Amino acid sequence: MRPSIAIPLRRTAVAAALASICLATPLAAHADEARPAFAQNVDLDRATIIDLQQAMNGKRMTSEQLTQAYLRRIKELNPRLGAVVTVNPDAVALARRSDAVRRSGKARGPLEGIPVLLKDNMDTADRQPTTAGSTALLAARPDKDAFLVRRLREAGAVILGKANMTQWANFRSSAAIAGWSSTGGQTRNPYVLDRSPCGSSSGSATSAAASLAAVTIGTDTGGSIVCPASMTSTVGVKPTLGLVSRTGVVPITARHDSPGPITRNTTDAALTLWAIYGPDPADPDSAQSAGKLPADYRTMLKRDALRGKRIGVWRKGHTGIDPDIDRVFEATVKKLRDLGATVVEGADVPTDKAMAEHLYPAVLTEFKHDLNAYLAATPGTHPKDLTGLIAYNNRHAKVELAKFNQDIFEMADKTTGDLSDPVYREHRDIVTTQARRSIDDTLAKYRLDAIVTPTELPAPKVDYQGGGENAFVSSSSNTSAAGYPHVTVPAGYSKGELPLGVSFIGTRFSDAKLLSYAYAYEQATQVRKAPRYLPTLP
Image (cartoon, rainbow, N blue to C red; front, side, top):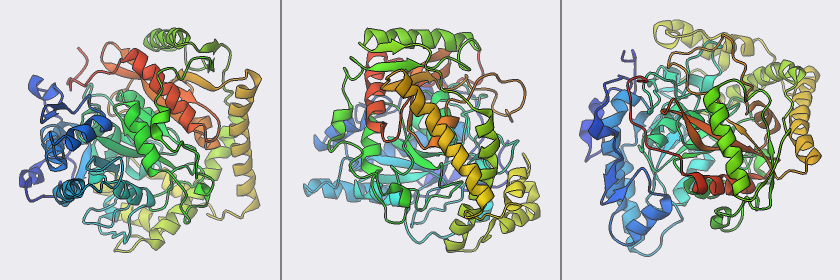
């Protein structure tokens, strides 16, 4: 079904036909559209940013041609994927400007001319809305780019558009459907269309997997990058808290929120993270990020990075649940040994139920505080606080509450939203301390460089709303609460079609190390394959 209200893809001067695309209508797949897109003899599915730069530097392709290729790709596939909610009306003009910059010999950075899709919770001071998936923010008018968007532009990127997302980053309802928003409808998994892409960075992950952009950016509060990346056979990077600024990003909580790249390969993930990281005076958590990645991103891309490293294996709560996960993970562990790593069994990260009991009260309080601050500071006509959002949703229930309720909003609004409240502070201190200890103590006990574990189960049905028996323990709850980095990389497939990822986890600011391990593993395995857009599993 089409969503009741959807933001039409914006027109560009050369791609007016895009305006008629319906955002969430699942159609039958066609074999010709399942093949990777090509632009001037460049395979968009396999090409890295480095390949694209070489093609543009060699005058085999321009940024305008590359941008047009992605726009055509969006036009072909978005009606069944629901991944892109807005196309930037200035994208082609930005690409032409980038081509002029390149001809002048003054390229701005490593992303010069590279089209990037942003999750629709990142402010852009242009003609695109920033809605967090809600019609309540259609008339919001951010007056400046999010800090990370500014970094992308400074690096030369072409902002191609906005990707759909689970509304309010999956923090409106305990019965939310991953990938659904009132502005974009339902995002679908490009591998099997009746399966979930997970969330909340659903559109970013699906867009990356389907080659709708060279790079996409997501945000992660509790698995919202790594889960969608795992389920769409992409590389997802949840950075150390504060490595990438959150200024200008619609928040859940500053104690967890971490923007990061979702890409088809680790090379692009490392390069993009390198381009957007760094201190932002408006984000105190970013103050210590300077110099935490190497001066040259290429030093993170070493095929022998795993040789001589001690990699702990986290099995408890992850293996013995799904036979395909077990098969893929055993192959992963063997490959790590083949690559020269010392594999250390028994490195299970403890998951403390007491921590979970403190987590929700802390995040509910932080959400009210942080979201109210964002709404109050954002120009335009829209609700100015959480209470106003709840009232807006009730007035527009046929659109906003059509799929699920807003019980999380209501619980959060009952908190004080006061971050100086001693009760809140106790909750937060317990959560952060225990989460960090769970990882750091495991690393220290076994003298590890990193921990490896399955990322997530195979994708459930697209309308999955949680509940039921699920013995799989989240691989991201500890890293999110600790503010520690988490990188997932494609590892295999369930039933031959549903992607499975494997995660590399480490301590604070070990991002570069984890990316190097993921790169070495990726280069040795090369398991990722392009999606086939199957209507359902055979």
